[in-house]
Length: 360
Image 1 (cartoon, rainbow, N blue to C red):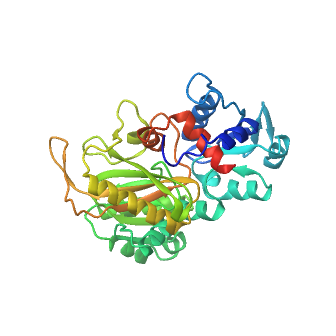
Image 2: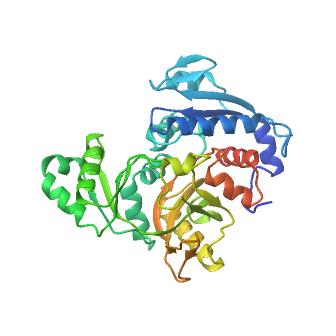
Image 3: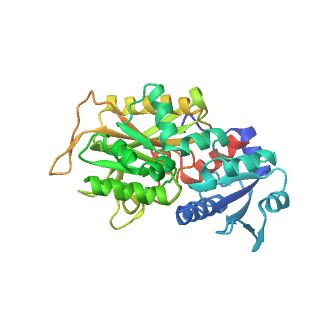
């Protein structure tokens, strides 16, 4: 049993059995399909009474946010406030949303105003972590390493393209990542090796209406650390390693493809115990700086050289570089938070119950 479990306590199990759970999925963001996969996996697990915790049987409702912004419940497309009011007052909304209004604090603010319980962080923490630039600044201020980078606003790109491009190209090269400041699942991420590619990527992101984050590439071993708990009281889960196919970075295909996706290891295969502990501590430091609540995931890259045989040459004193934070990490079959929880002795259904328990 993991030290961070609360669902297994007798009084919490009793409350779970009295609760209704609305699994909220879909949405209008580019991550809609990932969200639907997460939501369906969670809903199926909560209804599965054949494994551990079979005696915890809350009522489960599926609520899909369609691409018009309506909340679909039992086949009826409702305005959000209508859907909320149609569900029992004790309902906990389990947020299986990714990106957009589902992760930037908008849905969280709506549910807070309706005085309904929901899983995950509140509006302020959600908005901060969704913004890659603001979360970088918060982490750096707390002493967590980030890659050299620069922010170019959409307004500056539109009004002073030459000056904005010069600022982007001032980020050390030769390879730079140009990112949409608030997209997830590697949407809006461009790996650029020339100035022309940087310019084209900046134009694409600005044209979508977003500000632009430019970061120097840090080569090494990609890792992630799940966290459970609030701010300084949070606990770090085992570190997971991500090893993309040679020549690739951890893009959308590497994250979700069963055939061509990255290899993922938890516990880690390449990290020393000392480096793994350092990653966990950096994740907790960043989470506290974000005002992190309930659960999340913080992604890092450990500077290293990848050898021809697939192994990594890592300096034991290497300092992990934070990439981003996720307040609603995925629950797909390839997702990393469930993988880390499993390594900590907590199964998928138990993890879902844990999220609801913390909302209660």
